[in-house]
Length: 290
Image (cartoon, rainbow, N blue to C red; front, side, top):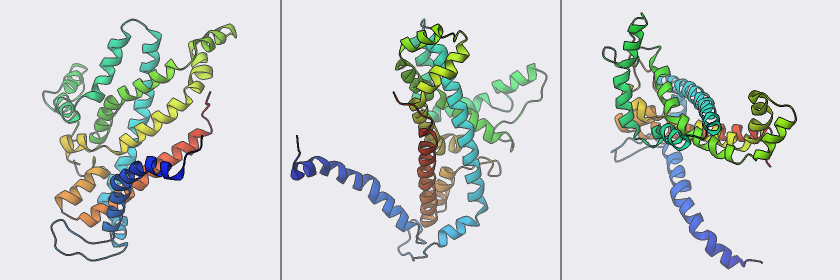
């Protein structure tokens, strides 16, 4: 059945209008703002072209926050995907108490991250924290997890892995449900007796589309880290946990340099686009669709 152009315009019109108002227009405004020296509350501004981007190139804080974001992205994405897949496989292999385990592991995703950050702050407390009690019991010296320059960012990454593993687990469970049981039985008849062989030759190849989606989602969510940094470390100590979103927040709403913060937003959005594009192109060739 052929659809008239007028009917197609009526169908697509509201969607295109909302897309323009909610996505295209704000991005255009931010991109134009990044070319100015506007400060929040100022009555005037000047066009400075690429001046903000040139300043970012020489900004040590921005370079540090970019490097920290890349570290956090790699650690949290890899950690949450591996743990989420392992937990999903264990839950799928154990039918009893399956609903309980799924709910328990998904709770960090559904919980308020600020409230959970307070709990983690207590667990990592330098004197009364649970982790330091364990270290003392093992005969090791206590550590100031969130104030140590070398430990602060890995500690935040561990919190991110804990929080995101449940989301990866749920998506992997959905993917495992779509794998026909006949293929598993056929692999047993073909001599794949060891579970690791069936995982590599049957399960993982058929989980390709799910894995592609999980990698993309976890990567984007890792780039968007802000809550735990703002609640626990404020980017310290000595910028060791400064990440892109926290730097954007500090520049825009702390120092009121909205034009400079807008330039960071443009780079941040470009990073998300490039990351997603690379993941799609790099993994699409290795993904098998049934």
